[in-house]
Length: 97
Image 1 (cartoon, one colour):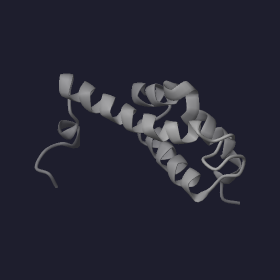
Image 2: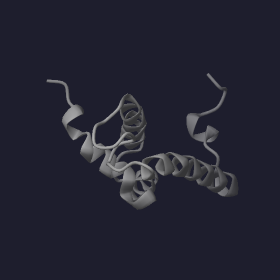
Image 3: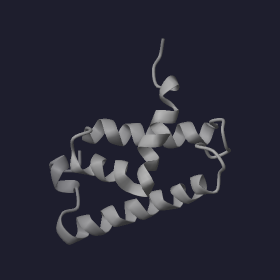
């Protein structure tokens, strides 16, 4: 579709590190929203639609990279483990019965 392999589209070297740092900074802004809350969710103790949107992105990243890949290990360690904790708090919503 792009005339190159998908692997060739991913920034490498210094450019890849700079893009990863931008990604982490963006998640840091979202972490700031959570930090203002007095509960595990954006609006406190009950999840909101926004929490499900954020969690769906986190699940996507976890599933795309896999839990053993460096990118996922980075994300799950950032912001005091916020993103793993969010998924844990929403685990009851993560399966269809």
